[in-house]
Image (cartoon, rainbow, N blue to C red):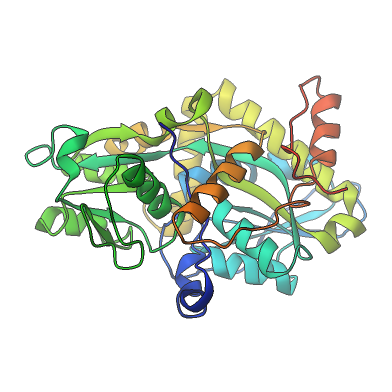
Length: 369
């Protein structure tokens, strides 16, 4: 059985009305915030690349830990030399895509749904996916008093972050493969799909208004801390237990004008992922420190530890899974068949990987010519 983490473009009439909701990158909230463009200090004698500054964007989420840790530990700045980093954080995909289109950021960490939407809405002219960052970190968690096995979901109320977001269509696809029927727009059917912002999902669970949720981390672990049980880890539905949850994207203009800066950021990303792999406990603490600085509150260990464990940080964008996600979104009736040819440009990443003695990664036939 295979499930897709879906892509969030509603077709036709629904698209215009719902698009601001559907572009949320990983379902971590619909309001966008920005950290004011915090700049990283550089050494006075450090050599600049072709740009004085590179603006990067990411979310204050564990699935964006490559960016959180890379900035926190100075691993990106080390590769950029005298080129300064201007870092901005966002809580929703639309604002990050808008910032990329406006030139407010040059490179961003973002989920597959807004990557697809940003690419297709601009007819392939505004961005490229240039690397991967994270896989996994999505779970079905349920009230163990009401749901003990997967078949018990029938007739229950299960939350997803938003209509058409990545977890929403993943759940709709899973329901369809069970042979059950649900109207995608209303969420009504053999299972009640209740679209609930992740910020309030734990309260909805505590109040009993939902019986479970198909959600990303750390929301899943927050529910577990409230007594819920993990019934299914979405990674088990994918080949090799991997599917993309965070991409690295770049403005095509910036990629063309400053390829050396893009390569430096990708080197920083690769080295950050290496550091995370070699120092998992330090990396987890670093990410939590960054989250505390950005949100004012660190995650407690009972949430942080299981959430961190379920996420894999990697350089491969897992392009084939992005294509599968698109196909399942189309099947669910939430996405017009997209032309994804050209969405990837992995030449800079593969150059970095080759120089580091690492295997190159595939664009699954969706690369730029």
